[in-house]
Length: 328
Image (cartoon, rainbow, N blue to C red; front, side, top):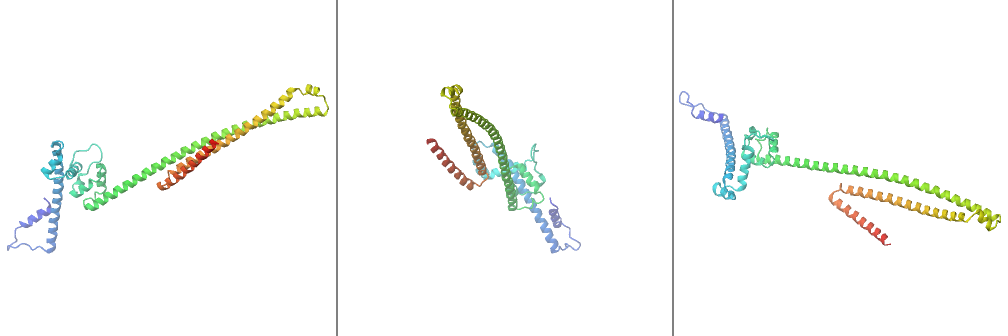
């Protein structure tokens, strides 16, 4: 029993002073006494309702275990006039705030804080689905939780949920940015490696072209030397038979062979040059395509779809040009 109620009863049974009169109570003293009695009754009512809520929840759990399968809703309606939703809330309230069994894992509920809660506050706290998170929330607000109205408590829970949702959104966004950055770095390394390969191929091709050019120059010089000897022989009015002896038919054949070889080398050099140009342009186009596709992932959805459509249109036009070239 509270001290205020004891004081009220003691005042009712106080022995009158000499002369049969009670000491007169001032208005201020009376108001102070009445406020104390009201607050004591309020606290008793709060505790009574809280304990009754928990005890009803405990008994509903026991009843549900005994009711035949499929008859739970009917039993609630006919026996205790509860809906399934109300019964579930009462059972959940007991399971979270009334079950005092020692927990092996997770955060343990503070019984001192629970003892300060009323029925509406317990119901509001059930909106925090995780029991550990609920215990953490109660610990964070232990100094002002008991004085919160239902609306204030619901607002605090909503703000907490929004803050956690924003944090989760930020975390996911940060992970996506990190993944994108890693992909960009990996793609950059691939492009650098491809550039090194192309550079090496270009150097090798340049070396081959230089060798071919030197060979062409050497053979051209040989042809020029042979033609010079032929012209000198003709100027000296040497008979054809003598020319044949000095410049036999194999020399003519060698000239023809050299000229054919030069023509072949020139054609090969042209093909190598065109092939290198195509490879360079192809790799450049592929790198630009990958960069454009990567840029799409960083755009807003409406902007991304607009640019994706532009890319598709451009690629369709390119494919048509390639197909027309193949038919030609």
